[in-house]
Image (tube, rainbow, N blue to C red):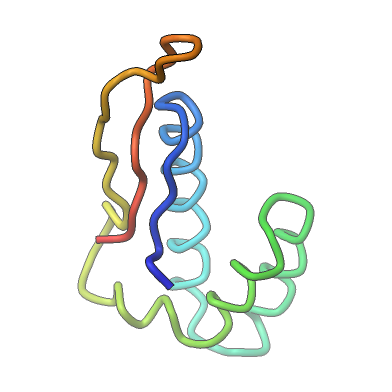
Length: 91
């Protein structure tokens, strides 16, 4: 999986904020039993695929980082409606 998404710049900024909060919450809880309620609360906010990634040790990749888990790369505007576009990807 490429772990990057092309979307509008506004959506990318909102997703970046959510991802930082979610990964920080999961990283702070060391015990696997305590992670389950946190992830269960996220079901309405993020896709099931993302929850599976978080539970399979994906956050261990970011153990040395305090924040800044994703990067936003600005692209040229979309031709149809001139919306600002961006790519969001994990660092």
